[in-house]
Image 1 (tube, helix red, strand yellow):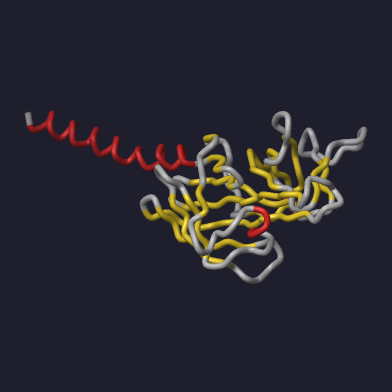
Image 2 (cartoon, rainbow, N blue to C red; image 1 turned 120 degrees about the horizontal axis):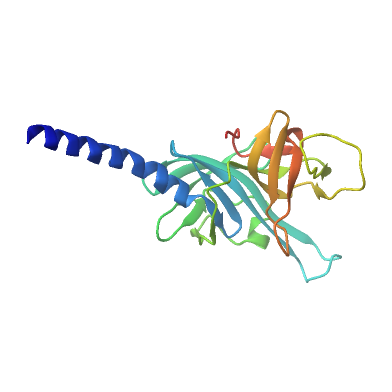
Length: 208
């Protein structure tokens, strides 16, 4: 009887140890303009990207709310650092997950008031639109033009699609010097391909 109880206790312990990993993966995904990766070790990172045209024409002012995010979860909350690629200043904040996800920052990033609204005086409400356990990283394109290659090689060929500076991407896989990405602002279906990793600013070092 004692041996059976010991075995049952071991099984319960193993089940409990598995739960955090599954729960973490289930929280990764697209929260409106925020693409979020929640790792098994509690680290979170992602990219927030929302752009708007002033009056619906290309001649109007373009407004963008763009920043990278990194932090670590404590239960359903996480203290986060946010920043724009190339800028020294980081803005801290709090990300809440769970039933009512939201993001609140100590200061608004440039352009965010016009594109997304205030994130300082009130929490910015988020909604989980799509779960994506296959995302391993996120970032913003920093090159003026980044060619999307079908394979992780710089082979000559016909004209290829490309992304432009500050386009948001999620990372699907990686090879030395390359990352396979999904363009997050694509209209009409997924757009994927390989980019040179030097052409992207990542929210955190990617890992398989």
